[in-house]
Length: 549
Image (tube, rainbow, N blue to C red; front, side, top):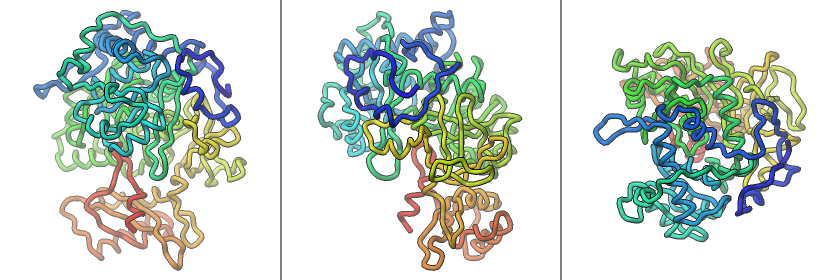
């Protein structure tokens, strides 16, 4: 499978025309369980089939209520909301399959319903992070030629400031707006079922923009089949999500890590998900206990903060309902894995994925976990470590991580497609090592490799060593210019409460690292800071630290 192969159901063919030329696509596989019919709307399987199978009374969503408690939303209730909203999009706004709809909101019942309704109506969801400002939103509106928007009323001002053709003011509908033209009032006028549009399995249904650090964001175009492929891959075959599970986490639904873990995966498994707008480490732990969550989803830095909170208040947090914890988004240090295991008894499930691939493609769970390794290729994917000429390197050799399988990169009308996809491989931008058993050991993002005195030093490896020191709460490592070495390793360190950073502690940290990993990798510069810059998904923003040096 190398290009779209089924007649599109889109009346607006703009999305298909923005796909890269067939010669620039990665190799895609379509063997079971990734063999899908020509006509496929992923919402049919995620939601409608549950009701058809008599499971409409099952809990789909758990959301906060106005009184500090929790409301459970059944599959049938969620379907009714989705159908009413799909009618509003198609009848009130006059949208046709293939049109793009921008979604802007916090994690919650409305954001989930908006995403499902958009896809069920054959439209294309353009998911956006809640923290984006008008200038950033304007770029996405123009890049995706957005024609309508569904937005939380609390976030609409920035969106209105971003308005430009083709998005018109009257095409913005808000939840949280009690007026006659608000979304709730409009939905109340539509009580009939909405039959899912019979889209092609390779019709675009999602444009997910990367959270790149520089330049124009890249739009990753995903098909209906891709949404189900991520469910049939990592979720079903590695995590083993089941109907009794209840998911909880921090990544926004606008981020494909959150979209999978907190919406698509639980729905596909007929499980449930707890959606909270914002969470601190303490409130996420409290929510897990209050809702009986079984699977958590967040970044390593957040897991570390939760484990430290449990250390500070022994017995305060009850995590007995949890059976699994999934970490992704950045490298998982062994110190964080150990800290979480000591606090909860759970072995972290690490994974590496990419917006371009839609979700996790390397992971390991349970007995398959190997110290220091991310894991092996998710079944259906092939992983290789290549040199700059795309030749496989021997086991144990650092090279470029390459992957291909049932999903792959298709940028929205972007010449950078030719950089990400070469020779049929998706080149993820990661430097890694593979052992003889196929286990992948992450070294660094290729732009986070520090070249110092001829040595390649991975920033995450140094961070992992620093984090093992008992006085350290968080750490980020970058390379800074050095006239003698080319680059020097610099560590930005957040200390645990009550610990004072001074020259003596800096030297102690350096000596500690020298005794933990190869001495040439130690941070020659140490700066103590109150906090580290992070994205709203919890990932470290090393580029901001580099900019300040």
